[in-house]
Length: 191
Image 1 (cartoon, rainbow, N blue to C red):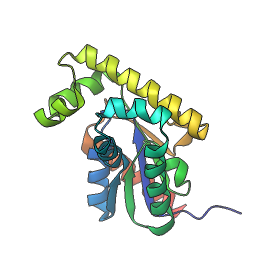
Image 2 (image 1 turned 90 degrees about the horizontal axis):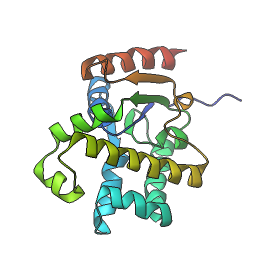
Image 3 (image 1 turned 180 degrees about the vertical axis):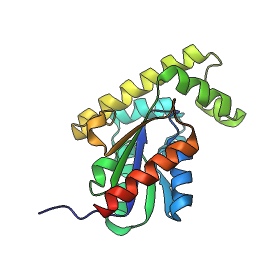
């Protein structure tokens, strides 16, 4: 029996690839609700008194953070329609969604994140000033997340095979990314 498609778009990708910006633009264009599991994860990490990178390392041993995020994603998948979710694992928890992956090399990601980061976030997350140092920190974060998701779900969220659409955000600006997603989503939803 075929899985019924939901009017939910899940957007995953590497840090700095534009998940939040893209999710916001797509949600606005469709007049859909938006949810960010990254915002929830940051909040849960802060509640534990740790920054994001430390939260990722903590989550390798303490699965309660991921369990809270996972429960919220599952709830959204069961109860919502007309929603855009930016999350590394929403594609896994909401398999009937339109699944998008935003790809970007880590040096470009580091440049983008650093140029758009406010002083408060930089202080909270202890972000280095050097693009190369930050790219290395991002690589360690990806390794930590990949290790965690493999252990928890036997899945790699950075494997493009999981997604209906893969977009390189280095060669497409945010408006182009939005349009590529909207076009592919309309085809997917009507097929």
